[in-house]
Image (cartoon, helix red, strand yellow):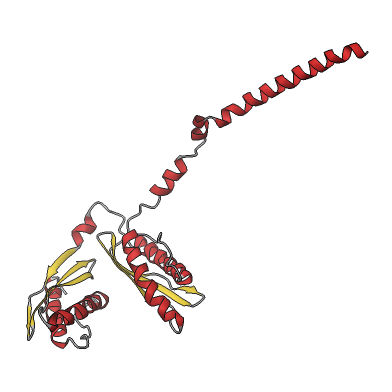
Length: 250
């Protein structure tokens, strides 16, 4: 019986070796890069990129208000030519420290939305809740803009958008002339191509014109308030804006 032990040990060792080789062979195909690719590892990433390319309709759209721990955040977008041309928060947390957080975060979030052309934007440091609410309302606005996009995207939208320049209005401090972009019967962009310059006029113009541009887009008419400290520039702006609207057909 003792003489048979070495033979039994050899048989057992051989069996263990064969089992190990079989196990390695069975695992080898799973580690092959070709089999991993065939299983669908790469395609899902490509599908997620392609899935987001949906058009958005021109005009101004306001997302649903998003409730945060410090107050509601609501985003309004201006879209022209299928692109976000302006983003603004019409609601944001206010009062106490929220005023400082909002004044710091919202302009950055507005800029990020225009640059990214989506709600995939980074949160602003120190404004986690406001950033999260902003992104939520921004996505809501984008969804609404996509829902309003015409089914036919073969170039008809671009034909509808047009730019009209009003007559220059003479003021005590210089000429004011306004150019607007109209799409879908709405003003999507307003800008002053001429405004008073030189001396104190530079400061007045830099302060007043952006506010007047924003007011024109929001109102959709020339019935906008004058900017404090820029009475003549405001009057000239409204006159030229009305001229542009008349040329655009009201």
